[in-house]
Length: 116
Image 1: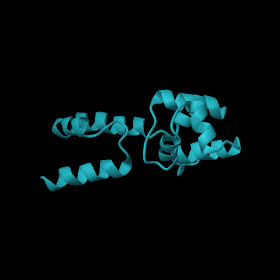
Image 2: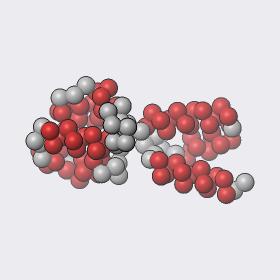
Image 3: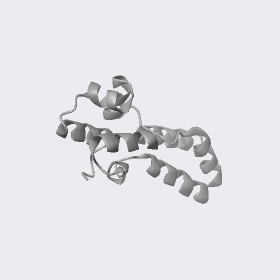
Image 4: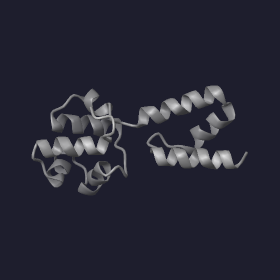
């Protein structure tokens, strides 16, 4: 795993290795090409079920793709924040989606900091 590679970049790399067009990949997944493109570009994050389907179509183990999934990191940040500062933890739970990206998290924390 490349430490700097995103989930979308890894999916694209594996798809290219299989010589699968984005459209063909989307058909196999029963998803729209636009959705798959958004995943590859990091604009959307697939559910665990979709990641599992992608792993199957790409011929890799689920855990190999899950290693690139940012959702567990965001969930861990929420959990730890709740332990350290319950008020902030509750705010994060209510305001951050599980598929929040790094930029959304930074924006949220800056907003919280500016309200102090």
